[in-house]
Amino acid sequence: MAFSMLSGAKHLALTCRDIAPKDFGFVCLDFNGVSASLPRMAIVPHRRNSRVAKTLVPKCSVSASRPASQPRFIQHKKEAFWFYRFLSLIYDHVINPGHWTEDMRDEALEPAELNDRRLLVVDVGGGTGFTTLGIIKHVDPKNVTILDQSPHQLEKARQKKELKECKIIEGDAEDLPFPTDYADRYVSAGSIEYWPDPQRGIGEAYRVLKLGGKACLIGPVYPTHPVSRFFADAWMLFPKEEEYIEWFTKAGFKDVQLKRIGPKWYRGVRRHGLIMGCSVTGVKPASGDSPLKLGPKAEDVKKPVDPLKFLTRLILGALAATYYVLVPIYMWIKDKIVPKGMPI
Image 1 (cartoon, rainbow, N blue to C red):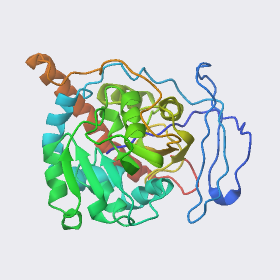
Image 2 (spheres, one colour):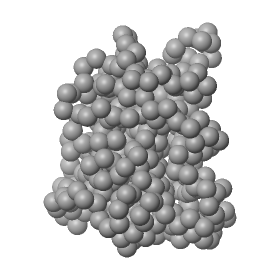
Image 3 (cartoon, rainbow, N blue to C red):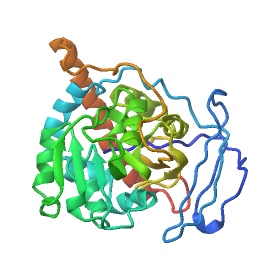
């Protein structure tokens, strides 16, 4: 999936409660202008091959995002279904090289602690199986289930010989077809941006995990550049970092941590956002359903839609998506032109 990461405000003030060691390569920034209603959130950098982590707490975020419930052009599951009917043809060859590379995938999966070949893992919104290929480096394929609502994406996953032992099923991320206390690990990469109700999807992640199981959700982060923000609002959900952690916390997860990720062309200024911008993890502390009780689902996929309205939203959303296909090309060119050491 394409990414949208936080930030790049012009004036930044460092106000971390703790300062991370230099070898973390992580800077915690306090950006002015956050909603006071959001709790302080722990952003925890991970050092490769080490369990040591330093917790950094930013007081706020760079920009305010719209409510998760605000309509996007490709938000509803029916529109996403048809969008991926065509995107599946080029997904692995056009989207991934710019936004979701193998090294990014491995970095993002590291906090999931896939440290046992016998772990039972569900890959929700697994699509073409690109993320699953990273999972099976550490877990036996026969113990991995790939779920997606798009049969066209899943067909691409079935064509990968490395995934032939994985279970591949169609399903809804907000209504998972797994029993409660089922899996050791829940992984979802590049899926939350299409969920009409992100809190419900994360509540489902809590439900299907066993006691002590770990969820790892990888997704975009909201941009601050006005043009990128416009297209992000038109296209799909680009949450703030605080929103991810708030959703995990409300669902009942403990030890909620967030790790920032980015492609090679990224130099630390997140004005344009990233379609894959962070990896959020949490541990299930008690058996059973999520303690957060929600009402009816936000979207009924069986409900008839207006064909003209549907087509208009689909086309406009696809145009906005095209913008984010061009962003990494633009940033790659800037990376070649702008002297090293300077932000782009």
